[in-house]
Image (cartoon, rainbow, N blue to C red; front, side, top):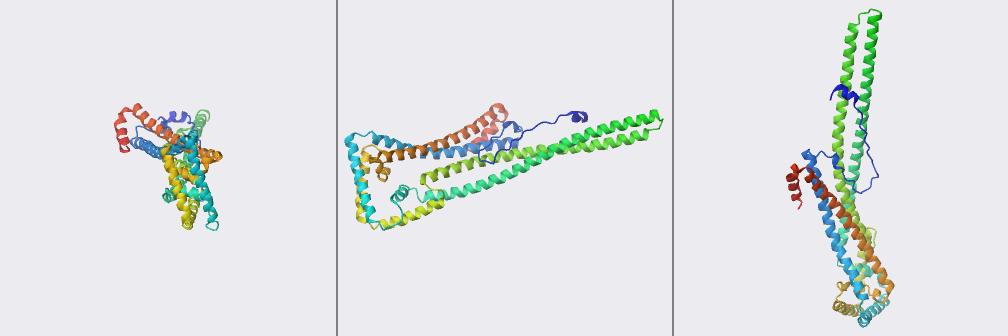
Length: 388
């Protein structure tokens, strides 16, 4: 770049939008990527692969739970479409179970501190506990670690942005100093010419001194500008890498937050400590209720018989209904349970769609690079194969 071209160059305007420190990933603009730089190219492709892998794992998990919730809703529709005689038989079992549960409640009036609703809510989750509790605790710990990483990355990003603004200011100041130096140099030469022509003073020494001083000043300013410009480019590359890493961490944070929110909703708790408390309380209550052997055995018998009936009626998940028999004889209870299942399914669908969108975006990015830069296709496909 020539010296006078540098003096005439216009400062490039840059807009950097720093939004709120949320946890929604901000996609990197590919135009900020130097695709011909091997390290940047490979890092970018690997980040896309990591996002695809993370999203696929979450989609698989959510789809399993989604199918289970859908089976519950399908069973509900099947039960409501039963002929009157079959529904009457099923309701008879339900009323018998409700009656036995009432007797059980009366006989244990001084036993334990959990309500039937709390006890049965935990009983429905018996097969999932304590694995679900352990997983919830691990997920909470992982979320805290991911949040710390995000905060650290946010600090590094803010620091890099601040340094970039400083370097931009140095470039502007250097250009202004160059303009001032040129104008001062021209004024000095004009003055020397006037002295020589008007006053007939020998100004040759003045010309040499002025030219030397001007050259030194402009050389210093030009070197200062180039140094700041090079560092600014380095800071921008570093900032891009931070954003790439931050995107991957943000996706993990969003996913783990979604997993925890769904678990809290599913278990009707706010923290793993609360679930642990309820679980321990349930275990104690279960031990105390074991004393009510006779009533329990009769209740279990009726439940088994009801499950047999439900299986004959082709209900996919019959066991769950013995824990919510009130819904079979109370339409309001049935509506409430249906609403809860629909909310759970909507939550799962939202998680699936979110991860599908992220996976498709990452896939499109890789496909776009392969299409636009076929010379790197083999290298990119080899990286992708490592994640398959």
